[in-house]
Image (cartoon, rainbow, N blue to C red; front, side, top):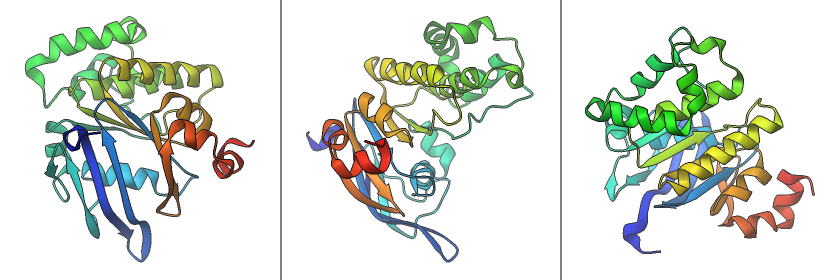
Length: 238
């Protein structure tokens, strides 16, 4: 792909928490229109990579380039305004607030288009419109995950980073969540996905990277990774 198709580029990224190195010399690219998946066991560094890309963590070394501009070290709210967003692990919603208020909070950087974006989100997530006045804590796990994704869309992002969306959900709900991500990608959203469910995520992705103990150990097309014996043995169980 052409260089101007690269939406996010991470180059030689290293991150540490005190004396513990979480990421070591990680490099990857996400092109416009792709779903790219980060595969790895719990503790491999996937969440750290997403959070650092957003601006939550400060890198020890390396650079993060979004839309051709270096954003390493910039505050997260500035990166959100630039078109980057993160759907955190654990279906992070404001539990004591209504569904609608959760969605409106997602639009706080983009209030000019709030009505249009809310209408679009309700088209994609009709269940959330039905429950717009319901308190978020009373939603099911799958509905809270939908709300977390929908809230991120209210900021009109160019790149959506989604951290472990299938965690703790029943298999039938996991299917719904991945269907939503594929649909959003077809609508034009670029997605960087962190996921332990390697089979499901690779089936919907274009490309992937395998993270092990903070390092990228393998990368390739989704088909290549699905057929890689090491990936199948370690992450798919086949």
